[in-house]
Structures are given as structure tokens and as C-alpha cells.
Image 1 (cartoon, each protein chain N blue to C red):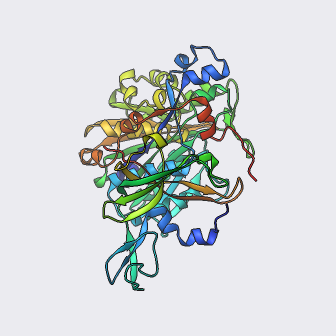
Image 2: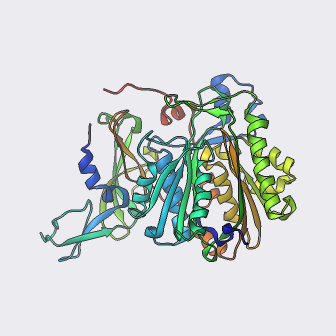
Image 3: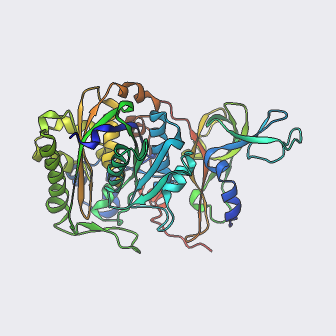
Length: 134
Length: 354
């Protein structure tokens, strides 16, 4: 499954740094970033960096994975509520399916998300792993 | 004239070690080594990067921890040096991805450096020069690897994944300032990897005395001579750590007791992280050092060369320590895997893709 290189490049701020959009009209935040507010329809949006910590609201485990994802299998996908209440869907990492719990604290890290085969581009992006307390 | 290094110091340090561990006894079991091998090398277990980790992602997390401790605007960092011998791309810099992901781009230098295990250290020395000269206020040096070893080679006991990063800045903002630095390099065929080779080879007879010991000892003695210091003047000594034994032995040859080396020794529990090796050791020492203490650091890279640095810890170290996870936090965070999962995670099992 090949990604579009130009599209990934356009969206790299969202993939690398959890940058979403804040609606200047209603104030709500969207992730991934959107040019048009999905809540009030306003076209006036600005970049907003999201908090990197949150908790797992729900998750699913994918054992029959798309082409190119066998090395990461099984895939654990989480619905995560960030500290500011924004919800994002993202892969979980550094965790086995039997270790995932609803409500567990997670934090955003940068990881390999996908590769275009052995010779193509490597795509990096945000994944969430269990929060490291220190 | 005062040495230019004294104007600079480490304003932020950070390390990262992946979660997974492979016990040395697994390598014994799979490849038919003598059971005494791990003890002879002083290696208990090694850190293994997960399937979505590489030198870039490891470097990113170490750099992020360094930024947390430095508490500087990322855009003020004007150089990112990424030292590795396991870069994800042969051509396409990892330093730019890390810089972009940390908000350092676009007004910055960024490059990947290669000198076996001391590439990151070359970046550190260059950072000192750039900051001391006034060309920039902050520069970052990262050392990170997912170290390769031919399966069944003795290197496989230790070759591991991890990294550390340092932000160099003005002395008055530093947790530890540099007193001096000294580099010693020669052409020595002790260890290499050709462009198309997945695993490195080592030149029998060259890896110990003519390479590791000769270069580290020469760099450290060069530094001692320039600064008028000796082993008694230092509270800690951190050397490159290809296994658990070599740093203790080179320390003994230079007059350092074991007690000054153990605080920065990490390889027995996480393996040799190549470019991360001495860097993680330094990060671990900064995690516990007290103001006024003096640290000797001497990374080594095959090919071969070594840098020796003298650092003096300042009062600022205490406020910076709790701002990011310590090396010990990462060492304690672990999940054991067997050789099969390790092989899959590190790409030793080759699949064809269609």
C-alpha cells in the first residue's frame, strides 16, 4: 500500500508534531488539521500544537494487516483523549495487545509508521506508548 | 589565553533506550557459544529496538529529552549533528527529520556524521567550536544506533539499540561546562562495514590494543597534558563501552579505580549502543553528578579515533535532572523477548515483499 509522498510532505507537521487546527470562530480543535472547521463550518482556522499526553478511551487489535504491515503486526489502534479533551485515532506502540487497558495513560512518540517497500520512502509519524513516569 | 571550550557547556542532556531486552544466554543458546561467554564479556542483556524503531526515532527521543532539560526555544538551536552507523537511509539525512519533528527547522545546520561509534562525538566537538566561536548560541549533538552484528558473531552479544543527545550552549546556562577536549585519530583497520554489507566485520588482532586501548589512552593522555590534570582530579570516568570489560580495563591502565567508572557503565545491562555508548554513560553520570564534580568522557570509534573531554558540573545540574526520564528509568523499563522475536524486530528474518 503506497502512500502519496507529496501528501505526506504536506501533512508532516501533523504527523511529526501533533499539529492540529483551532477554529477561530468556535474555538474547537480538529486533528488531523482541517482547512474548514467540521463543527461550525468556518474557514478561519489556525495551527494548534496538541498536548502529547492522554488516555486510551478504546482500542482495537488488527491481526489481518494490510500489505506492508506484517512486520508491525498485530496492530493496536487506539482512540485517545488528549489532556485538552481532543480525541485522536492513532497506533499504539511498545505494548502487546494483552497489556492494553481502557483508561491507560499514553504519550506521543515518533516512530516508523510505514515504508514504501525496501527501496522507497520511510514514513515517520506519531504513535502513542504507555506513559513513562519520572 | 583561555581555551575556547570553557565558554561552553551542556545545557541539556537526554537519553533513550528501547523497551525490549534480549538476554545474553539466548545468544549462547542459539549459536552454541560457551556458557561462560556472557561473563567473559561482562554482558547480561541488551536493548532491542522495536519493529517501528530505528536510529532516527531513537535519536529523536533522546533529543527531545535533551530539549526538555535545556528549556530553550528549539528554533534557537542552529546545528543538529546526528552521529550513527545505522542510518535509515544511505542518502537522505536523518538530522533534518529530527530537526523538523522538534521544531528546530528551517534556520539550522543539520547533517548526519559517520565515524563508526564516535560520529556523535565529532558532532559534540564541532558543537563546542560553533558555540565557542559565537556563530550560534546552541548546537545539538546526537549519538544513536540500532547496532548491527552478524548473527552468530561475538558482536551479537552486545550490539544493541539506544542513543543520547546533548545541547551545547553558553557556560552560564550549563549543567556542566567543558574545560577542554582532545581528539586522536589514525587509519586503523579494526572494524568496518562496506556499503552493501548488512553487517560489520572486524580485523582480528586490531580490535583491542591497537584500536580501542591505544586511541582512548592517547586521547586521554593528550587531554591530561593540555589541562595539567590526572586521574585523581576526576570524580567520574566514562569510556566507550563495546562490552562491560574494556572500559574497566582501559580505566585501570589510565589510573582510574572501578568506583569512578561504574556510575557511567551501562553496556552490561543495555548492550553496546555504538554511537550511544559513551554518550548514554555520560547522561547517566549527569543524572547523578553533584555540582563541582569533574567528569572525564572518552568516546571511541573504529577506524579509529577517540575524543577526550573534561567537564565540570555546575549548580544548574540539580534543577535540570528531574525534567526528563533518567537513564536508570529507561534501564528499568524492560520487557524480555526471545531470539525469534529479536530476529523479527531487527530485520534478521528477511521477507520478500510484493
